[in-house]
Length: 156
Image (cartoon, rainbow, N blue to C red; front, side, top):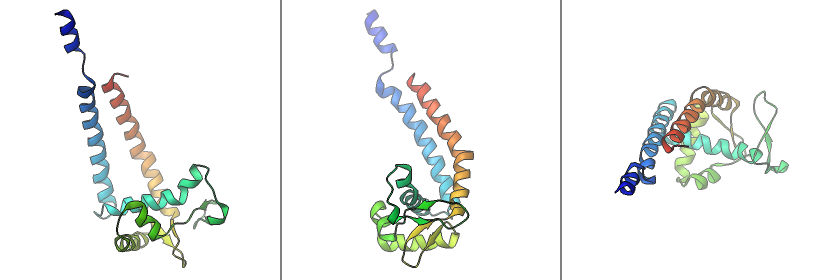
């Protein structure tokens, strides 16, 4: 009987995961609402901006660089970005090309994306500055705090 009581006192892995899942869901929903408001209540805009930015700078972060495919950033920073186009963004997101084209036009109007004559898309210096500071000031702290809370809930 004592062994049965001890087994009941220990939380099962499934019972531990539920509060962590709720914690993470709250974190994600809060962020989605913020992005929704930040981008004129269009949730596809931050997805597309993020995908373009990852195409532009992601290869550099992973050390996978092809100097022939890189072009200079627009703006004062001294860096190189790998170009992408609407077709590659549509393929990466699974969204229809026409939807991606329209949303990219909106991102250009907002000043977050620039498009070259050859169709190459680049995240702008303004977008990198704005969202970089936003991530550093607001979201990074929240991510660390959420991870710490999840770790405590799991007993690590």
